[in-house]
Length: 528
Image (cartoon, rainbow, N blue to C red):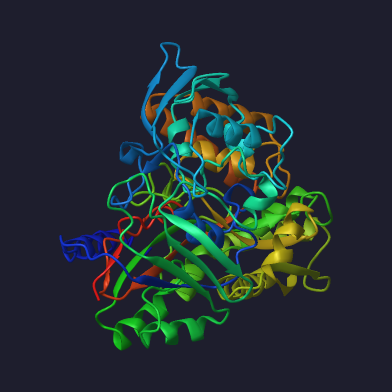
């Protein structure tokens, strides 16, 4: 087993921070690459990092993960639109004091009513509706959100939930204005953030410009941020090393590509870190042959996780359960906690068991199962799907990679229009409440295979109300073992990749346990 790259990650982060100057220069346009056109500009309705990276800077949250601290933890949560908060004695009411004098980009004042409107959308109350509500499940424990006056708002909870602040601090947890309908937010978002939306041109660019009426004095430093959409990864790498861009797409630089960048642009500052995203198999448990538990278990037994990591990341990808393991992750478990479960022990012994199960299910060397392996039409997905197809041959499965464009791919998952899919699941927040509720909760939008277990539901609820971190961590371990044992959504590994920026980019901290929470850009400046 290769050692975790986290020590190198910490060194990279420390070097990057030590190189920051104290004298920020105002002005300039930060030029960043994007791999694809964002499906919309409405964070509450989307799930791809291609939305939160360009549009997080348009908004503010009630609270936020400190943008200068690389590892998101409960201790790094800071005030934003809320200046203070307090919890009631019974832990079922969380009251926020809001900042006064904050304005929306169109000049209208921000008040508690906007917070209520935002959470009415997420709780699906009132007349306005989101087109899709992937994170409504985060707030299933919130009974209602009420304005006590113009600058105090209270979350009324069904039961205590110590980690609610962690969800509110996520990059997705933007506060929307009451006076702008959801349909407009998809095309021309209005926020209170450091940058104003200017334009989104399909297959061309996203442009933001400085909010000169920002409520934080002296910020932002930049005049503008321009995200250029370049579909081909090789073209993106060449454009970065030639100096056309200040920064790569934040999830773009694989371990092999990082070597090339360091040769061609030795001064570039690159942070190699776990992305807070796992590659996994989504199994349609309602259609043959995977409505048969024997075939599902055989899938898990066929996986050689270390081989995936060796091929795609030279062994740097992190192995474990569904949540990112330590040291980068806060709550997850490593492979040692799962070593007696399908696919975590000796690969050849596991595959022999897998072949026996497939023979029981009616397949064998003379009757091989032929299926399509659906995946997103992106290089990292296709690469892993190709390796998967090769590994599945060991248990009598002949797979064919079916690459699907992003705009169609997610709809296919939502509609369960697949048999077996290789997917990447990003954990917006490194916290069990987000991760389990969103991906494994009964009826959750991102529970693509519609798995629903009363026993698992009880464990998810138990960890959520547990205030003691070590007791909560023990419940999380039980959840991880239950998921692996039932082959719910077999985890291949947690991907590691780099984000690179040229030396002129200052005061940008790259998060190491989530790719979704570090893109406010308000303190970033350019030394050129």
